[in-house]
Length: 219
Image (cartoon, rainbow, N blue to C red; front, side):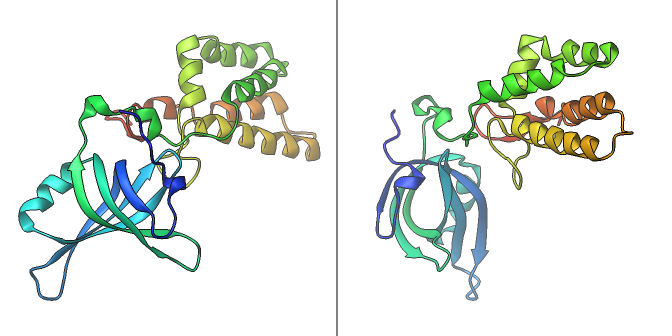
C-alpha cells in the first residue's frame, strides 16, 4: 500500500488519514481515576508530531501498547508557539505488516551516503602508517561491513538517529581530529584519525533498522 500522506504534508486543521509509526506512548489516568488518555507521537521518515487519543478504555490499553504501525485518523488541532503541531486522534487501527514499505518510516540522512563513503575512503588512503591503513582496510574492504557502516544510525535519539547517521558522525569526528592535528603537530595523526574512524564501529551491530531504529539484542 502506497503511503500518500507524510508528516511534512500536515499543517493546522489538516485531516490525518494514513499509516504512521507510533512512538513514545504514555497512558495517563485523569483525576477521576477512571478516564485514560493516550499521549504519543506519530512519525514517518519526514518527521514526527505529538498526538493525543482521548478517553481510552482500560481494555484498549494493552492492545494500543503493542501496536507499532497503525492507520491513524484525526486532525491537526493545535500549533504551538514554536511551530510544532499537535494532533487529536479519533481512530487507531493496527496496520497489516504486508501492506507496509518500512522505508517510508525510517528517517534518513539528507547527505549523499555514497559521496560520504568516498570521503571516508580518502581519509583511509591518507593514512601513511601501513599497519594502521591495513587495519582500516580489513574492515572497509568487506562489502557487507562497509554497507552496514554506511547505513547504520549514530543513535536511536538525540544525535543523528537516522539512516547514515554513523557515517556522518564519524566524518565529523575525523574533521575535528584533523583540525587538532593541524594545531598540535606533535600528535600522531595516523593513529588519531584511525581511532576516529573506528571509534564507533560497534554500532553496526548495536542497532537494527529494518523496520524501526532500535537496539539489537546484542546491542
